[in-house]
Image (cartoon, rainbow, N blue to C red; front, side, top):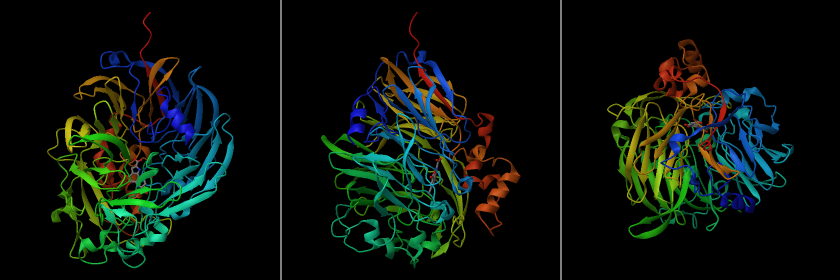
Length: 605
Ligand SMILES: O=C(O)c1cc(C(=O)O)c2c(n1)C(=O)C(=O)c1cc(C(=O)O)[nH]c1-2
């Protein structure tokens, strides 16, 4: 889209949620440096008036900043010339019965701004285009039905004259898809499903590439499932989308296959026959037609809820003396993948947390993980209770987007160090009800370096951690790297932290009003650099506070609702699909509340 390309070429803006189409979350601004970042102070702040988890971040185009909130998905256009003055406010009316079918808090990962419009994907499946000047609705499209468990949390992506949205509901047996709408009219242009026949998935087995050659076999999106389980097959698309204008390809990943109980998704005792395609898959598609150019499935036959939706960062890096156009993905399953983004060829797959134990490695010929039987939750065709699987379902990294700096050639990655016990059980499908089929409890990784989170620098050519800093809780905020040599991330306690990109040394930290699960952004206004972040604890990691699940009674009620008819294993340890137990002490450090905080270095008097 020309307006996005123009906005992102000007470093004074923060043009899109991930900073640019490549998803790098890097800024060439360099007024704030490793030397002066210690002088950073609050310039202004703004309360959104909404509690619960604030993901995503502000967009800045020219003199206007756009921010959004979790349900009911308010949008504010704020005047940077009169900081915090509300130019317009959009507030939708949504059916609150959408809230109980949102798995992981009522989050929203932000708006897209293009062609004088602001695009918002509302929780209730409404995609709306607003006039960027006035906030008036221009058109609305309906992308799903929350009575079937479908919701929206992802930030839309605009490419040329199309806006792309995914779908959430992998915990409700939703069948995932990515859908393109016309930016001018809101009319659907194409929809590509994540499971089912090739025609629905927009795969041509004679052309779509997998591991360097055409897929060959037909309709794997059907034959790798028992019966018609693919219709409840998950593979939802609630993560981030990136785009390479030169290759004309969009990239995104699909989530967990249907129920978390693997046995119900098995066609055979042999797990290798039940890939549950195309869940857990990176897709490269032509944005004009939706056709899949290549695919790569990271976790065939998932047994742990390692959704494969994390951002695919596009970077040009040096590999063995050669510049290569790669795509780098830090998957929930604990492996970081480097692929050729034109062909989908797998170049590197290495653990980005050494405590990851469910697989020893990835076979570079087949692209498949070598699963360790002990940590499998499926044995001889049956459910198996398994303990001490690392990472937990929260993943080594979840939705919190990483950053790539072209200056250092390194990736800066917010991560989790949490393990789990996993007890699968049979569950029957009812539209609109949870289809989870597993009781999970999570806890800090044993023998870890200290905390449940880690902020790391990663070399994607070598597949190695360069440096690493522990944090008390999962690092659930998106990272930012800058030309000034400073990288930023937020913590669940609410600290905004600035570190030296060279060695990870802490240079500055500030306690914002609530836990940070938003993404740090930077921009220039009137020639001066600012750093901006949304606080507001929540998301899956903070679901205990966000949904009031930290007390025994609330936690038990949650268990009864999510696991109907399954009485075992309720209470705080397993509430919030296991996340509450791990983060039980979070309330000692922070409480709910959505606030934007903007920082600067005050002028010398
Ligand atoms: O399967 C799905 O459709 C789905 C949706 C979402 C979501 O939309 O937020 C999450 C997840 N799964 C999920 O597995 C997960 O770990 C998760 C974390 C978060 C968050 O915002 O903190 N959302 C989601």
